[in-house]
Image (cartoon, rainbow, N blue to C red; front, side, top):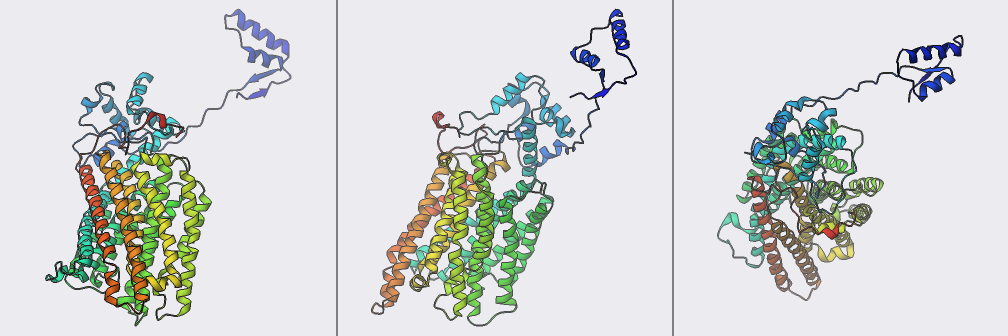
Amino acid sequence: MPTWRKKSPRQPARLLLRQRKQRLRQGHPPEGHLRQLCHKERRSPARPPKPRRRRVRRLPALRRLLQQLNNHHRYLLLPHQLLRHDDSDFLSHQYLVPALEHKLSACVPSGLATRCIKNSGENLALGAQTICLCSFHTSAEAGLLRETMKATGIPLKDPAVSAAAGDMEQLERAYIDASTRVPVLLFYTSAIAWLIVGTVLAMVVSFGLHWPDLFGGISFLTWGRLRPAHMNIMVYGWASMAGMGTAVWLMARLCRTTLRFPLLLAAGGAFWNLGVLIGVGAILLGDSTGFQWLEFPRYVAVILFVAYTLMASWAVLMFRHRRGDQIYITQWFLLGAFLWFPWLYAAGQLMLFVVPLQGVLQSAVTWWYANNLLFLWFGAIALGAAYYMIPKVIGRPVYSYHLAIIGFWTYALFSSWTGMTRMVDGPFPAWMITASIAATILTMIPVATIGLNHHLTMQGYFPLMRYSPTLRFTVFGAMSYTVFSVIGVLISLRSVASYVNFTQVSIGYSHLGLYAFFTMTIFGSMYYIVPRLVGREWRYGSLIKLHFWSAAYGIGLMTLMLLAGGFLQGANMENPSLPFSESIETVMPYLRGRSIAGILLTLSNFIFAYHFGLMLLGLGRTSTVPTFLNPVEAETSGGH
C-alpha cells in the first residue's frame, strides 16, 4: 500500500489546479483516480521505500554433489532427477539414466543440463528455476517434465507446499543422502552378511536340539559353541550394524545437516566388523566368557569401544549442529540409544571383567545387561524408526506429540528396571525382583501411548499397507512391540515365572523382541532408505512379498512353538512324579516345529540378501514409480 504525506496548507488549492492544467496543455497524460483524490484531500503520494534485499545463502557447487553421488555408478545423475517432489514412499523416486542426451532428447531442450550445472552456484531463490526445474524457459517445457516425473494413479495426495520451498527441501535431502551414502551402505552390507552367517548357524543350532549327533565329532561345531556364536552374530553383527546405519541416516535427515567426514564413520564400521569377527572366532575356539550376550573376550571389547566411538560421535555431532530448534520424537529415541549403549556395555564389562562381582550378583548383572540391551538399544532404534517411517509414508504428521513424549520418558524410565524378572525364586533380595516386576507392569504405559499414537496416526490409511513395503514391515514391527511387551508382563508375574523360567519361553521371548519387533522394523526402514542411496528402485515386488510372508509366518510359527513348548516343559518339570527325561521328550515336537519355522526365516533372509545385492550392483529398476507390492488400482484413490 502506498504511503501518503500531508501537503503543506500554505499552498492553495487553485495553485495545484493551475499546475495540473499546465501539464495537460503540455501533452502529459491525465492523472489517475488516486491523483485526483489526492488533489481533493490536498495530499500527494510519497515515494515508496525500496524493498530490502534479502540475504540468501549460497549453495555449494552442484558438480561436487554429482561427483559424490556417481563415484560408484556408471550412470549420470541429473539435478532435476536427483530431487524428489515428495518424500513419501508412494510419490517419491530417484531417476538414473545411462546418458544425458539419450534420456532427455524427447522432452528437454539441447544444452539444458549443461546450463543447469553451470548455474549450480546460484542462490536458493533461483534454485526453483535453475537447479530443480533446469531453468525451463517456457511453462510448457516445465509442465512436460512434471508430467513425465509424476507418478499417476497413486492413492495419495500431493503435498500442500509451494514449488520453491519444495524444490529447496528436495535439494537439501539429496545433498544429505549423498553424504551418508558410503557409510550407511557399508553398514547395511556388513549387516546382511552377518545376517546370512547367523541364519546358517541358527539352523544348525535348531536341528542340534532334536538331532544331538549332528557335528558331534567336531569341537568348534558343538551346540555349546554354536549357540553363543549365533546369538552374538545376530546381536552385534546384524542388529547393531543395521540399527546403526538406519540411525545415522535418520539423524542426518531429521537434523537437516550433512554427515561430515563419512570415511571416519566407515572406518568405525570396519573396526566393528573386525571386532565381531575376532569375537566369533574366539567363541568357536573355546575362548568364551560364559555370560549371555557378553561372550566376547575382553580384548574384543576394546575394539568395539573404539569402533563405536568413531560411529556414534558423528551422530551426536549431527544432533549438536542440527538446523532448527524443534526436536522430533525420533531424534529423542535415537539420541537416547546412542548414549545408552556405551553406558550399558561399559557397566557390564566393568562389573563382570574389570572389577568383577562375586557370586550370584554376576547373574544379576548379566540379565540386567541383556534385558537393557534389548530395550534401550535395539528397542529405542526400532521405535524411533517407526515414528519416522509411518508418518512419512502416509504423508501425515504423528497424531499426538504429547503422547510421543510421554511414551519416550516412561519407556526410558521403566524399561531399564525390568531385567531381574528372569531371577524370580532365585537367591536374590526380594525387593530387587519385586521392583523389577513392578517396572515391567508399568511398561504398559509406554506400550499404550506408543501403540495408540501409531494406531491413530494410521487410522484411515491401513489400506496403503497393500502397496507399500515400508509400511507393511514397519506396522508389523510396531504391532509386534505390543505383543512382545504384553508377553513380557505375563511371564514376569511370580505365578507364571515359576513355570517358565529355564524353559524355551525365554528363547521365544528373545526371538519375539529381536526379530519380530526390531528386525521387521529395520527391514521396513531399509526398503525405504536403500533406493535413496543407490538411485534405483527395488527390482521385484514379488520378492518383497515373498520376503514379508515367509518372515511373518516364520517368526510367528517359531514364537508359537517356543512359547507353547516352554509352558508345557515348565509344567512337566513342576510335576515331581514325572522323570526329567520324559519332560524333555514332550518338547521334541515343538522343537521340530521350531526347525520348520527356521527354514522359513532362512528363506526370507536369503531372499532379502539377494534383492539387496541386486540393488547394490546397480541392477534395480529405473522406473518412474517405486516398487509396489500390488498393482495400484485407480478406484482406491479415496482421498488418500
